[in-house]
Image (cartoon, rainbow, N blue to C red; front, side, top):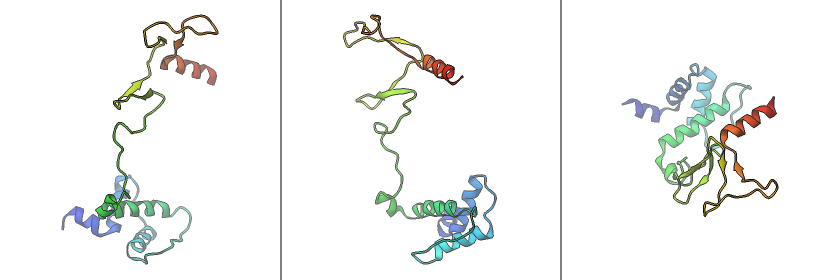
Length: 148
């Protein structure tokens, strides 16, 4: 039996491999007992253990192992799938919006003079001067000064 099949067959082995991947120490006897209970216990169960034993972490690992084992759950939409790039969330600190083709509109590092669709200057009604869209550098400097 190869490693992949062993990981699929026994949750305790999967838990040990996951803990090693996360740079955690080997699971304790109590954690192995919880893992065994999750895998072989009744369909409806309740886990009770002292605070800090890792009940939530082990249960999260069990959900991951269940999805790893059962491709039908993936087919039924119970597994995470990345959205298409055109719908994926983006960091609004660095991008203004998403264009119709799905690409992102980047924020400029430097200040930009605002112009309309025809390329004409947009005048600020309060100051009577051309409007300026602050770049990331100016925004960062302003935030840093306000913090100090």
